[in-house]
Length: 115
Ligand SMILES: [Zn+2]
Image (cartoon, rainbow, N blue to C red; front, side, top):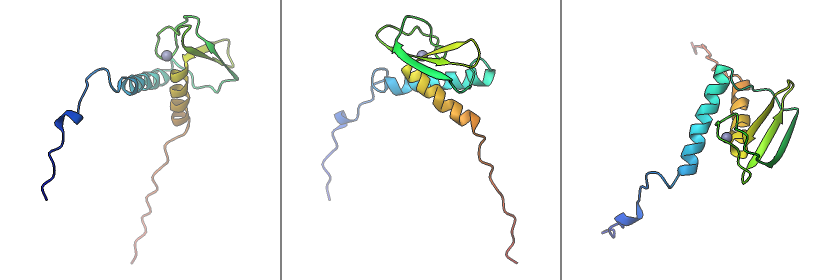
């Protein structure tokens, strides 16, 4: 039952580079959640959504400019505001708002006693 020694080299933890995307999107998600909680970011349903190349305007979710090389999502709100997002930020925002809009399911405690 001697197992061959696992190649230690196959388990590599690369600090910054690998998994960068995931870590960043979790950061943005947290940021979006905070902004929603603070009322800085509305959770209104978009009347219309436009997607196109960025024009360097800041993203309302992460605050970074949306570059022409990136896809900008514009969410038309009932008000005069147009929310501009990176594509990834938009998806996170939409996702967060869904959680936000849906109240957490109440845990129903049944206090039935079987005797
Ligand atoms: Zn963004």
